[in-house]
Length: 259
Image (cartoon, rainbow, N blue to C red):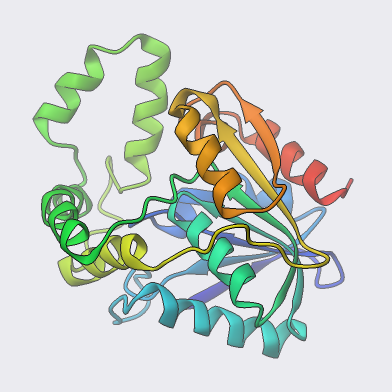
């Protein structure tokens, strides 16, 4: 696991957690230059997903422990904020519920927070992971996916193209990722339980609710977090981050009350 730091150390600390099988730079490279003027930015690069290492992703809890250890050593166990993109939102929730460190502002980035039993998780992983790994290794999306995307309105095509770029489509950035790492990350996210009514004194949970995802995700946020700050955006999953980075940065600043 690597931690990439940007901005002045005296600024409020914000951690950024990438999504499923995503490269940290593809996920946050566009917003880091805008964030680092107001924050000390720390971007997490998970085991198995950093090209400078020869590691395999273990599981969500082992990675969470490594993150906690780093925050305890480098920041005395307390940071201003943590933003989780998609799967990264699961990490934000886990870190808050475990209470090993303190986060003033936990920001859930329109994560789906899907959970499943071991049997169903294995089935879902066996279906999805080969498709994801092929995209990571070849740098292109499957034909069926491209055909489906081209039937969408132009504006939606632009959104889906941005999402595909997170998986290395258009380059070979992620060709080093093994199927084992992808499977473990996908599977362990599904089977690692997130508690209900998570509430920690001094921590505010902000949920970027992408309305186009559907109301069941709003109910899910309200199930897992006690009195979350719901920030509605009439967009798709992580569209605010992918297509409107300036607005995303401002929303993050507003959550943290940072100028």
